[in-house]
Length: 151
Image 1 (cartoon, rainbow, N blue to C red):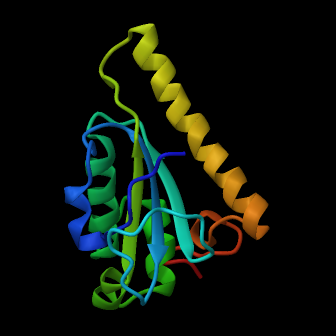
Image 2: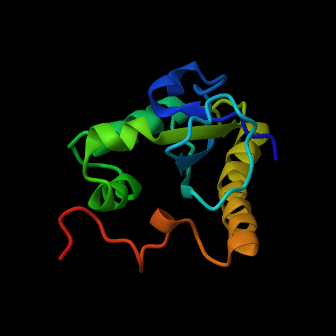
């Protein structure tokens, strides 16, 4: 696994190759871990992926839009159910990414296989986290974490 160093949420657009699809991992920490090497730690709160044309940058922006009060990202809706103070959340939120370089608009076998690997890799990450910590990250567990607006 070759994830980027952790970046503070507000600096997420500085991550390399985020125009491509890939996996993103979010971590909540009151300690500044900016630019530290990625590692599997129990304060990882969410693992996500995207195969969209807009790549990781677009998906991370959807997450941002949702935590800022819009809707559209289910994982972010679960995060803000618990972390409903936007400023406190983003001051403690970090992201690491694993981009997969390919052309999402292509039907070439090479690109289709890479996009399939992105989806597979998300489940590999779920398995890795679960093997280490015995459960999914908090906001990937749809049975245990409620969404904003849930009763």
